[in-house]
Length: 217
Image (cartoon, rainbow, N blue to C red; front, side):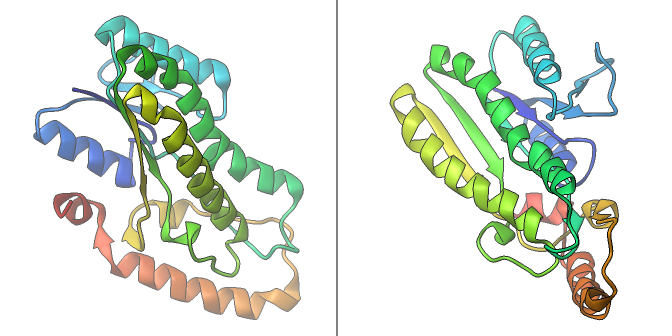
């Protein structure tokens, strides 16, 4: 069975890839920093770019002839109050977390329809169900993925394609350190922001590791 995992260079994506490989699955991972053509099964893909996504999918089909499972894991975080966040900053996170998923789905769905089988796993978040202050646009992208996946599940069911949502809670991954902070800070928000984010980061670092999370699923 052939599995494609986006954002597989670290965190949940990397742990999933290692776990599935250990179970005998054939796995391709993607990363913006990887090479193309790849030297191994880690392929360069930027989910923000249509051509990059299409090139990656075409490469896998040329090599393997099919894609059975896609795990849409690539994502970024941004922290800041609604008032502090520019439209461009909001668009940036949507380009990766939401439209990135859409680009990959559009690229693989014709393949899965021809196969009359497939599984799409969209990595959402508990924050796609419950929003937190100072991460409104991360939550918004995950809320969007929830609705998108529910509609997609019904649309592709006649073709033997299944759609699954995963809604992780706090997991200790490099995502914590890579989260961006908005540029236009407003002093009135700072004391509340610092207090909230210190609690958030403490919880994220103190819960499951990616390895233990995968091993229990």
